[in-house]
Length: 392
Ligand SMILES: Nc1nc2c(ncn2[C@@H]2O[C@H](COP(=O)(O)OP(=O)(O)OP(=O)(O)O)[C@@H](O)[C@H]2O)c(=O)[nH]1
Ligand SMILES: [Zn+2]
Image (cartoon, rainbow, N blue to C red; front, side, top):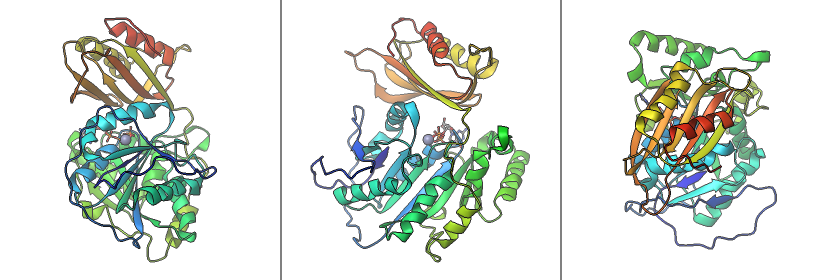
C-alpha cells in the first residue's frame, strides 16, 4: 500500500500504459477518509534525488506507530508511505491505517503485486518511479516492511537500483524493537538452522529504536540494549515510547551516500537475502463475521486465545497468536472499535468512525501466529456475536 501526504497535484488521468512485469500502484477505495488539513504548497526540486527510509522490526514492535508519528510531526515534506504488507491481511490493514491516521493523507495507493520484497526486486522501485512520473515528485519516501520480512531483500533492490541511476536512494534502515518481547524474538531459536528474522532486522539497521519503554523496568532495558549491541556494533540505539523519536535522528541520515551504495553492498554481503519471509510456520488468518458482540464476550474470546491458551487446532496444538488486529462492532457502541494485540497484551480502542445506520455492522480480524486454524477461530468468533450471521 502506498499513501502520500502533502499538497494535491492537479487531477491526472488514471490510466497509463502498463510496463510489463511492473507492479502498479493503484488507488484504494476510501470510504472513511476525512478531508486532509490544508498544507502549504512547496515545489520540490526536480533534480533532487528522493531519500527512502526503510522501517523494519518484528510483528507489533511499533513500525506503523512510528510512521504515523513522522507524518504527524512533518508538515513541510511531501511524504509517500509504502506499507509493504502482504497476504490476506491487507484489506484490514488499510482500514486500520485509515482509522488511525486517515486525515493525514491525501491519496492512498496499493502496490498491486502485494509484497514488495517478494515481487521482482528492481520492479518494486520501478513502480515508485512510475508513480512519481504520474504524480510529481515526493520529498521523502517511507517504506514499512512486514514484521516478518528480511529487510536485506528490500534494501538490496536499492543497491541494484543505485547502479541504474535511479531518482531514489536508500537513506537508512530503521529497526523498531519491542522492549517487552524483543528479547524473546531475538533469542528465539529457529528450526533447521533458519536465521531468526528479528536478528536480521537489527543486524542491518542504521538506527535501532527500542520502543515501548513504558512496559519494562530499567534492568530489562539494559538486557535488551546489550543483546542489540552484540548483534549490531555500529547502529545508533534510541529508546522511545509510542515511537516518538527526534526526527533528525531517523530521517536524512545519508547512511550510504559517500560510497554510493558500496557500503550497502558490503553490509548485504554478510546476509543471504534469498528468503524474504523466513519463518514458514507463522501464518496469517483473516476472517469477517457480521453482527455485533458484547464487550464481555469479545474479552472472553481474546483472553481464551491469548491468556488462557485454551484454543487448539484440529491436531490439538495450542494456537499461538503473535499479533492480532481487528475492526469490530461492539453492541451499544455507535463507533467502530479497533482491537490490537501483541502476544498476550491487548487493548480495545474506540475510533472516531461511526457505523452507518443503514448498513450492517461487521467484524474483521487478522491473526498472525502458529497453529492457527481459520475455521475454528471464525466459529469461535461467531459464537461471541449475538446475531449469528456469517459472511466469508
Ligand atoms: N505500551 C505501549 N504500546 C505501544 C507503544 N508503541 C506502540 N504500541 C502499541 O503496540 C501495538 C503495535 O503497534 P504498531 O505500530 O501497529 O506495530 P507494527 O510494528 O506496525 O505492527 P505490524 O505491522 O503488525 O508488525 C499497537 O497496539 C500500539 O498501540 C509504546 O511505546 N507503548
Ligand atoms: Zn504496521
